[in-house]
Structure formats: structure tokens, C-alpha cells
Length: 113
Length: 113
Image (cartoon, rainbow over all chains, first blue to last red; front, side):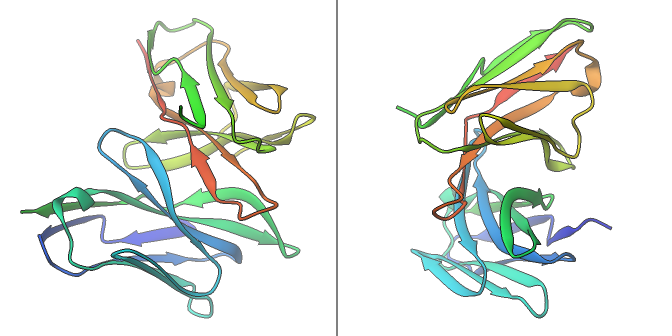
């Protein structure tokens, strides 16, 4: 079983829909990251969070440490949101963030106009 | 100009050849990483370096070596390339003193024939 599991693996939506991507992990972490990879291949970091909730524009990320679960929400989705969304965790050793990331397999999101 | 650059962006080579992928960054970060991405497997850590004198193996270091020539430069070498090293390779940097968010280069697509 992978240490980081994402669901769904593929997601198709119509423009305007509310989207949720889930991430579950099985190890102790110091932080959880959400990344976006566009069809051209480039990867950008969207969020890094260790508790609670963060919001940036139409994107919202939440984390529940007790349940070892995080969600990425996209409100009012748009075709330009089409990308691969990747969850990754920084593992926790002695309370230090080592910066090494363990990645989920990614969720391929396609938003149709 | 991009903060993290990789050269070359695309490379086709033959089995048994020695290949070097280069990564440079202008962000002033101490930490640098090399990842490979394969369809269906997600991103996996090859090597990482927390400063010029610190080099560490990741989860899939066999068949690879690295050199940290300076704070800004981190090279990945394939001493004798084999076809299953065909993948997309990413370099990344992070500043653990701030947020440990990782900043990725544009990727190098390597094909080993």
C-alpha cells in the first residue's frame, strides 16, 4: 500500500462545478503539499499546510491530522484548471521537516467548457 | 528568468551512454532534489542535498550519481543509461528556513533507446 493515496485518479467536470480531490496518508508528517502539473509538464506548489485550512483564490486546501486526510477543493471550476493535482507529504522525524517528499500518484482533472 | 533551470530539456540517447542532467537555481536555497516521474508511478526521489557538503540517496538511487558543484548547481548523472531510465526528470529546490515549499524546474525528458 502506498504511503500517500489520492482519489479519484481521474476526474472530469463541467465548467462551474465544485471539485474535490482527496489525499490520505499513512505516516507521520510534518507538512502536506498540494502541487499542480500542467499538460506542458511544469510543476508548481499550490499549498503547504500542517493544520487547518488555506485558501488561495478559488482553491481551498484542508487537512485533518487525526484522520490523516487532506482535501483540495476548486470552486467554480474552469477549463484552465485542467491539470494533474499531486498530493505529497514531508515525513516527520523528531519534529523536523526534512523536506523530502513522498508523492501520491496524482489526480488527472479535466474541466470541459 | 526562471528561478530553477534544467538542461537539456529533451535528450535522446542510446543504451550504455553516459548522460549528465544539469540543474541551476537562482533562489539561494540550500536544499536541492532530483526526482523522476513515470506514468502511473508518480514522482520519486533519486537524490537530495541539504547543502554543498551533504548528499543523500533517495528511494531509487541505483544507476544514478550526483554532484553538488556549488550551492546553485546540482547535476545528475546516468553512468550507463538503460531503457528503463526513460522518464521525465525534475530538479527542485527548497528553503527549509522559511516554508520548505519546493520549487521545481521545467523538467528534462530523457529517452534511452
